Image 1 (spheres, rainbow, N blue to C red):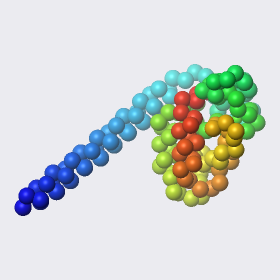
Image 2 (spheres, rainbow, N blue to C red):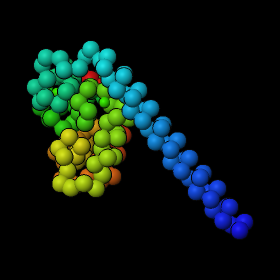
Image 3 (cartoon, rainbow, N blue to C red):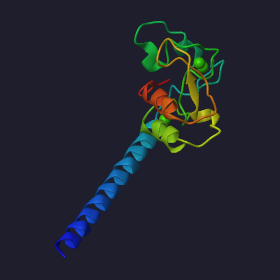
Image 4 (cartoon, helix red, strand yellow):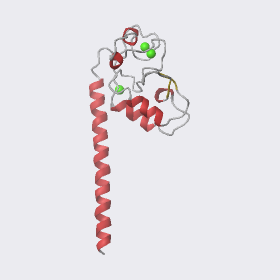
Length: 145
Ligand SMILES: [Ca+2]
Ligand SMILES: [Ca+2]
Ligand SMILES: [Ca+2]
């Protein structure tokens, strides 16, 4: 009898935890969408490779400029990894990749391969959605163009 009560309480705690986690995720997505609506720099002219990052940003060679799209290749359409295509890498972009985990063949928008040497130097995906894709988008967190 006592263990049934303990199990019932444990079940209730687990569902409360799941509900709280989902609520936090939904809130993060909403915040990400609100903040992404006000990025005036996005989709400017002169984006030769069409990855959403202007050539001038990608060609910036200043150390640390990767957070504004720098130290990239303006002819490589895969190195600025931004699945929501809003020029802001936030939780919404990570969630896009996480949601596609294990779904093959990979969607081009959430699939990449690392070419290096920098963490954000990415190439075309391998057709598989795995942990390397999740890590690739996490490593571009707050890289905004
Ligand atoms: Ca570009
Ligand atoms: Ca590029
Ligand atoms: Ca985004």
